[in-house]
Length: 466
Image 1 (cartoon, rainbow, N blue to C red):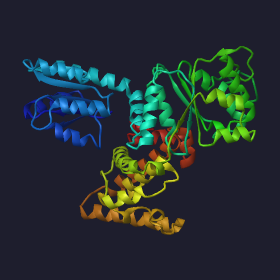
Image 2: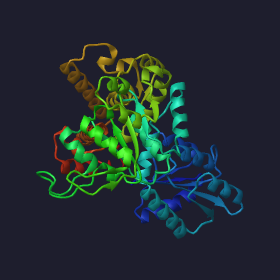
Image 3: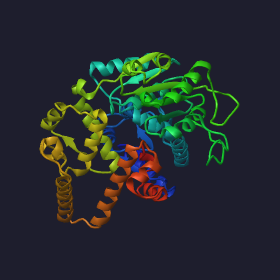
Image 4: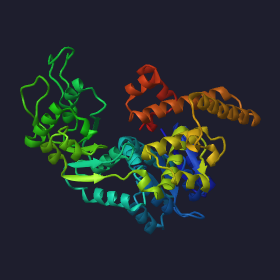
């Protein structure tokens, strides 16, 4: 669990709250100004905030507004004097969880904080989705069109087809469509139809009855049943096998489906959102995709622009991903120089936003200094040859430099700290690559699932998974 943040310029108030939380074994972090807390918000997050209103510099209400805009799921308790009821009303209007009039009873304060902690933990699942939503950033006109479309489709049940190159953020847009729809309280289930073998895809989508085939020892609910009342996102729909295209068309036509080996129809109450990097019009002409299914799916089409068509957004995204990587990996916050930002903005990024995020992840870990210059970019980005041996040597050199700096600073337990950072990077990168699917991540890392679960717990990554 993340700490409770205490924000108050009155040292005695901070001391009283700190002692009370310490007695309750609740982790905390204190700030004497809202400006300090705002700065810290760029690199870390609280579980709950307890803040005074009137302080030098930014007020508690200023902090609350910034917090609510960026992380609306984090509860905030606003402290105020009895005579300051107008501010208390403003606090509630600004999204405060509760207000605590001064002078307060410390037991009552702790009780409020515990209630806020419980609410924060209950909403943690939704919070992760909110975090993901912030990855959809952009000032470019093409992205503004996407934002407008999401807004217009907020209350619609229409089937949506998302077109875009790999790495443009198609699943993020699908999640945003779900989160802003009337189905937001129900499941969002995503499946990549190209990543599952043809023989397993039918069972994965529609489920199977016990004994339907060898190894079917029990009845299994498919993704359609798991998404009941919510949204089913079918990624890379263009690669769906022809026989499954027929089954999907039947579901869209009459609203029913059968489990594999089943004889009873099951009503499907799901909204379908699909995505593909392919030109479905061409695949229809080539006879590789059913025309009638295409028309069923192509009710509303959204096109996500590749990053090279929105170069002005590259600096914005790069800064955001560097902040995010520093927070996730527990490393020092890095900043790109103006020269490095201009250099990146001129690149084509064939892997689009995902490629830029992976680059920022690399830079957050591997760059030895706080300021990132063009020379700090990986060799392949600087146009140099990047054989495996060269990359290995470059990685080792950076590691040696980090060890040398730690020794010069007189740090201890260096091996343990760097080993933990190394493991955090491996685990988070693998989970990010697999979309949080632990079994796949464990296979890619070459470890058992139980080992991966233990590592996640030991490294405190439960709340940082994608």
